[in-house]
Image (cartoon, rainbow, N blue to C red; front, side):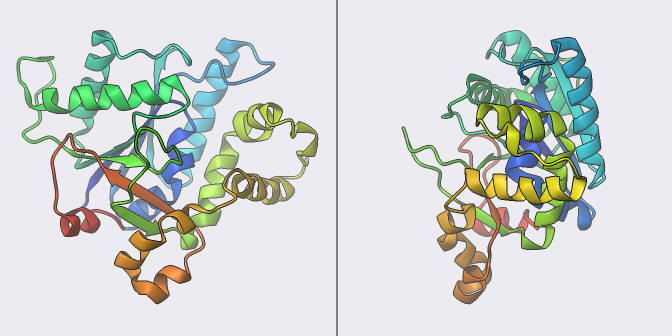
Amino acid sequence: MSQRILIIGAHPDDCEYRCGGVAALWRAQGDVVRFVSLTDGRSGHHEMDSDALVARRRAEAASAASLIDAECLVLDIPDGHLEPTLVNRLKVIRVIREFKPDLIITNRPNDYHADHRYTAQLVQDASFLLVVPGILPEVPALQQMPVITYFWDAFQKPMPFHADVAVDIDSVYETKIRQLAAHESQFFEWLPWLDRKLEEIPSGSDERLKWLKGYFEWQHPRSIADDVRDALAIRYGERGARSVHQAEAFELCEYGHQRTARELDAMFP
């Protein structure tokens, strides 16, 4: 029986960046995956007009999702202006109820970017209310809260990330890089501009993919797999874990439906 996986990020490239690999694995086994961006991405460029950028980023998000035949939704909340308001909470409740996910993946609430932090808070604030019929009664309440997990991150305060599940994505790592490459405005323009690497961007598509792989690994000099090697060993054994080069990892949120370690692991490909 297929699962329904809802991946909620703050910006149109966040889902692919944090779990594009495991999303590809879910789709390969027949699960339904939807990427959601709570903001429209209008602030993520150093040159483009904001309205033109919104249209471009919506197209990029659709292109990235199509590479693995995933669904895609970009809300109209302005990038950089996300707040944990009642209006936005109801939007998140609607998005979740309409999709009816078994599993939600989102940011942890400690992060450098306010949009990321408030994405986490909005999902947390929505979690119990998903099953309350009197809240947003025009959209039927869920019978059970979904399982909620967090993307991996490297932030240490107030508490470092704890990997409850780690997944080997070596077999789909190239697919993940192509998903990121579909977000051209971000990975070949805006982010390199921020990192003062814009002059390094090659022109050919194959050369850009090679450059992007190096850029992604430059941002993570210690790989995610190295950080979660113990969790990989639980899943693949000590020898199997040592052979993993690229991984994605997830922490169970204490809100949402709770699963045992074995049940949670079984939800991941």
